[in-house]
Image 1 (cartoon, rainbow, N blue to C red):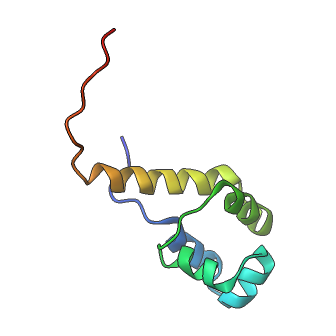
Image 2 (cartoon, helix red, strand yellow):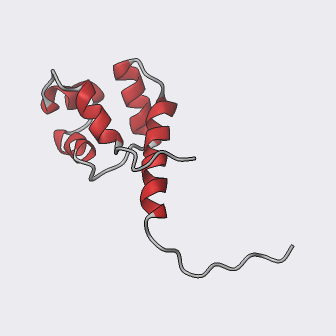
Length: 90
């Protein structure tokens, strides 16, 4: 069973960078301030490359960041109705 309304990974990331400016954090990650800001504000997701950067910078696992992103994306998708879907014949 999936978590109810999981947070965007950017919300979790804000806690990691609470004591650091966005400019400093972006510099340490090797990305632009604008890109980090989009992630922190939930306007961009965590890619596999970003997960690797975060893991290296924060001493975490890349899988944890990708899992958070997947949980968020899947929950968001489940909130929208799907068009009619037909099963393939077995």
